[in-house]
Image 1 (cartoon, rainbow, N blue to C red):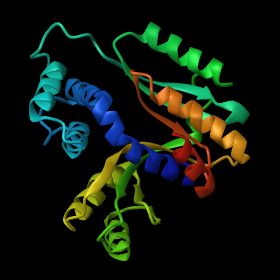
Image 2 (tube, one colour):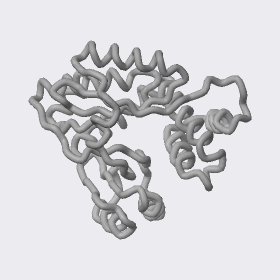
Image 3 (cartoon, rainbow, N blue to C red):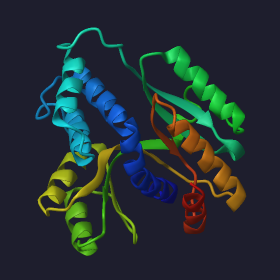
Image 4 (tube, rainbow, N blue to C red):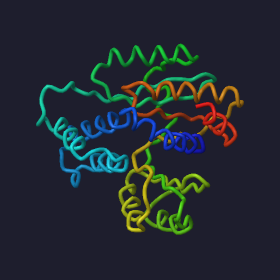
Length: 252
């Protein structure tokens, strides 16, 4: 899971820059809209919506933006472009598997942009089903290690149903099966810890290790894909070392 962990760390550090560009709020609003459309506008009865709202609040998204996104999803605000949700499967150079989560109001434009970025940087689109089997949907919670007791978090998370807790200097990451995710989340909330992320994620069953040069190429491709307006997140099975991550961040 180290590739997942390292990329999550990078995304946390990019969040402030994304927020300044307005990009983060756009992503969060789309997630809220789709969640409300699928499960209704009550976050108490719609777990996906509750997670999306929590993420928006953690990013200091204005309350009116959140409410407007919910109303778009429930149909109270008309005239908005219809968002479609899709996971596209792709390969980066050296066979690294990619799952690209997209929310878009123009699928044709979105696919064209994905193909352009992939082909320009040595990747390619893949047939449906050829990549997805390499990933599992899991509950994912990331916690800042500052001022918390990692061992206590480990104990509480495992007791509530987590299957893995990864502790590092930069993040404490908790992975759980979907069926226990809500219980794990609630148990950790009672500890009073602040979540960096709490969401349903795609976690690779196995990771791929590449040379430093090739790893950086794949990371640059993922970064370029995530800069596209319609892309919510890119999941990969790339294993990223601490040294490569430091180089990538220095060059960003």
